[in-house]
Image 1 (cartoon, each protein chain N blue to C red):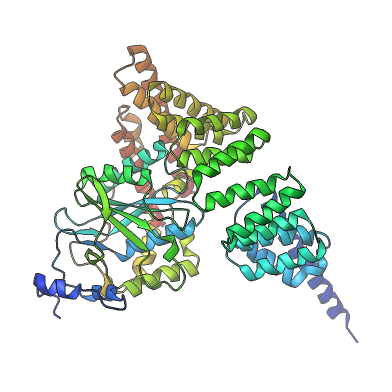
Image 2: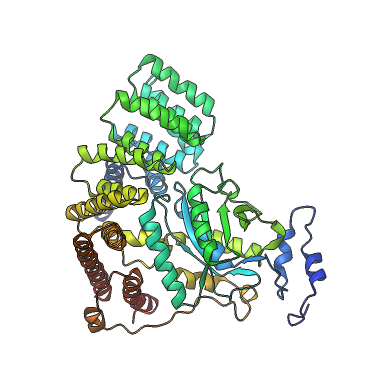
Length: 286
Length: 290
């Protein structure tokens, strides 16, 4: 005969379990929506969720399987990735999305030829499948064939002009190839579609600064200032503003008014940087 | 083997001869060293921090600077390293800023920049990138025996036996592979164990590189806390000889009136001194927050 205390203890335990489950699910959802690449954490939380509480998750389990599988591939957890893939294959036979996951697993095992064939078969059935095309470009990147990856990505962007992720990836590829002019072009596209994103402004300014030359330095100073306007806590933009203004003021090609103005900007930046450090120091003491 | 006896050069070279099974790294167990020109010694602290930096950002290229607190001339002894970036290595502004700040810090702590390390994101390719060569050239202008160190991601498996590093030195105007016989790591097994221990316990997340510092300026890019942790784990046998000690911190006195009354000029050294004064106070506080 179970006494009231045992029943209530069991109820409490169940409630606690539900709370813990909901928390874990919410965490995974947040990481999924924000596109975080914290794969070790996802594997920790997701593995427990899948192994212990699969029955209580309902239909959410499938998207969690996908998320955990990708994270497992990132952490070299082949066993976990294989389990997730099998479950998904069983539930969704013939799905393109699951085929892509199978291709990603082949990529993780460095079987690039097989992975490429897998993606080609997806594209045969559905030529507009952007995910498969992007995976093919990632294979080229993983193999170190950056020139080809750039070419393929350019062709992709001619068809899918609005893909921001792809523009950003292209800008990274160009930066690594030291082709700053083209990287700047990609970042300009991104800034046009995301005028409020301070990170794109700041990155554009950094590329312009790296290109060098008086015009580019002036442009970089303007975009560092713009990034600061959008987010006044961006330390990189503050330092960038200081450095570009100092370089312009120190250049022999500028006239006295421009020099004076830039000295003023650099001084302002210095004050702001100093203040930022003082504030954070004070916060540490509290 | 008395540590006070200076070893003649021939004995020294004898001990450096490689063994058949590739375990010549063990040779670095001897303590008294006749430092030879062109030799590079990598301390436990420097190696562990580089390794943890590469492990903390496994999907990005990372780079950093190698520092030495021993005087110039003769062999190079890398006693510490400063992890710099993990994003956009080829972009100039943050690299320049970081180099200037590290330079000023080194001047104040009696260290000098003697090298540069980088780990590429692409595991199969551990050759120096153009930006690595550029930064290494800049360092070589100030330091004759500068070294360029590439971390070979392909050799960083859990049971690796050899240090996963490839070192280059500057001959004429080109960077060429350094003779392995002139690279030394004291107590290699112990160093490797310390690195694995810190990685397993998750302490590698304590490492702060310059990029992380810019994301949150309360974090200390000189990594005093992590240095202390590594020093605890290092046994006395691996301690550097006197004169090649670890970083010594010079304490500043910071007063707000000095900062406000200071004449604002755009010389980059002045802003670095200002910043370093501020950050120096924190570092003292971070070490001992009482």
